[in-house]
Image 1 (cartoon, rainbow, N blue to C red):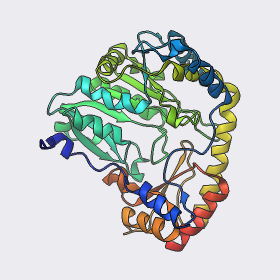
Image 2 (image 1 turned 30 degrees about the horizontal axis):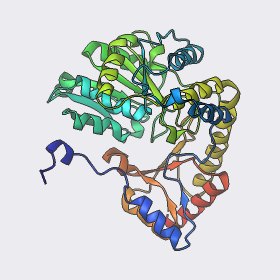
Image 3 (image 1 turned 90 degrees about the horizontal axis):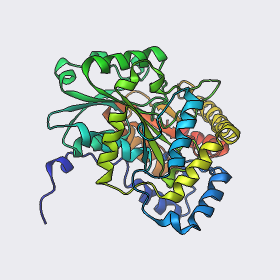
Length: 386
């Protein structure tokens, strides 16, 4: 057997890869496991998407290769939605890439732009696709801790000069996973200006743009003046429409960046299945009448979980967006062994902050992916550990 590559060996283990087996074993022994760890809601997608998929799979034409072009109608629907939601004018053919979920587009971006020694600026904790794409494409990740004193924003203005000189991509994700932080417009303006000044690509992960509360409406980075020169934004139908397993999203932005991602993808996949694209069209068309009620469900869960964890003794802000709570642990408590004890002793699964990067130590993530009653009960069980 040939030796594993150095790049591969530098990858960290994927977060809690053994936890599904532990949960399965606990359930087999009759333990009532409450899963607050996985960002995969127990809610149904829009009925229109299911109907569209059922109809599409019955058409033999939809069983053919979609290639990267895909359905022009889907591209046009995305462009129309971006216009209605963010006020943007988007060329559906030149400024959109169809993705098998936003994760694969985020992962593939570095393959087009990184040379050995080039750096990417990655939030820590953060989505593991940022790190994986960087390492496996030969780049060097520079992890920036997300801390409360910076409101969990990436302080790119504090980066060392040698890192700035080698930087090629800055990853930002607001509303943020896992911290649930949001970014003020002035911060986004500063980020765009910084990327323009230093010739850095701004990769903006906007997967949670539609899950926001109390009147807050997350922006697109492309609304910021000058962003069209340096930015590519990633969207997903997974969270907004409860379609995590359907694997469909898109990248939008600077046409040269979009073209580069598309070219990499031609060597990696053959496009989003036509039937899924038809479902994507139906999802976007259902936005106005369907999404508000779905978000209201998440908001009710947020309120219930926030109140329950506060009552359990945890001090945390009420998030304005995303589907997570980012909960601080008592001083000196390490998140991974604590989370494992909570699972084994209380039957509650949460995501320890360190599993998403060393910068997440001292916190754990709660996903609003189950009912209010289960969230409350989970908090009550966890309180026994504190």
